[in-house]
Image (cartoon, rainbow, N blue to C red; front, side, top):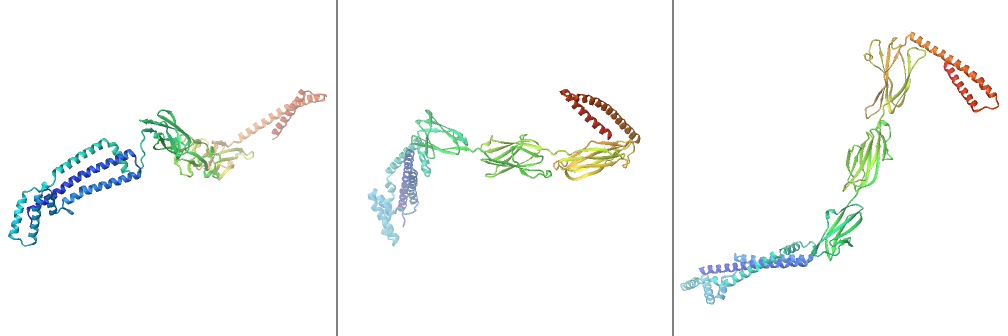
Length: 568
């Protein structure tokens, strides 16, 4: 049997837990804020160790969890009827503690309702329940809750929360820094010094084996009197130039230097001087791969500074260096190529020799191309044209027969020697006749003897006609496709019998003239010999006499040679 009294008791229980939820929420918020302020400011001022920060971190987490559970979650669940909540009898006893004249009536009513539910209700029992219900309906059960005390709690917690928020805003920087270090408990923090030391980190770069000047600037409320540079756990005192300027010079820096600064018990950061590794030469060699037609064997050139090679030679440079990222080759025209260096190995650069060049090799390191370069003077021997020396000799017996004798040569090899000829008929132009070809040599050789004979009469030439001829040579130049050399066009003419007689008469006249001159010279020598004989009969001969004897002997020798020519 349910009456309105139980509904009012349910309302009382709900309101009871709602009050507990409100007070628990305020308490959880105030306690959490207070805990955070204390822990964060403690860390901010004391610079706790990693282990202590770890302890406080978990303490905050545990405190938050406990306050949230007991102050908010549990009252909220009981307000919703979840879990063990106040029974009607407990609520009646709670109300009776504040209003003594109501407690017995509530308990009797609840007992009578239970009796009516478990037994057959009689008229007298029901009338009693109805009477007590009517007398208790007008009683305000919620007044049993101490509203005055509840308002005081709410006001006090609100004032305390506002006070804590004021502390938070006034100490916001310290609280935030402390919170940062607490939540990053695994990171080691160093207490800040009352001064600052400044280093231009963009300038912490030095070339390998060069000296480096480290400048340190100080500022702040308290400027230190000294600064120590700690390298490999060894302290080096920097030189004080003025009140806020310190300096130290590192001589011949070979590798990266890691250091920190210490002053007045404070350690400030960590820095590194980065060494720019300079590229260095280790070895350089060049191998020449000559064109196959030259017949030269591939060799490694002994002197890379000066190279004398045939045109078309493939030069393979082998370069090795330290701290080299790329190699660059440039010629006299500032054109070339860049090749990525092989780490720890030999890098090859190929170059085809075409012209005389000044080759320059450069190394690229971390800081760019080095000024330490290598130059090679390349002298290219161009493949020359073939040449020929040949004489045309007429047959002294057979009219119209000519002999050609000479020597053809080339620097690397001749492949072909041709004799071209054409007949120039009377009244016609040379180009009206086609050239006829005679192969004198077909093969490969350096020095080729040239011998050839022609008979103009057997070739059908008539008196007054000419035979034009030239020699054509082709070498084995594989680069330019075989160079061709042609001798100037010369001509041979068939001489008539009258012309032959005229030339014979002219030769005979020259011979007679020569004999006459020789006879005169012989008479003069005879006279001179007589004078010399008189001179030689004297007992002494001066210098002038000796000189005359020598001159006479020379003239006699010349006369003898002239007579030989005439005899021929």
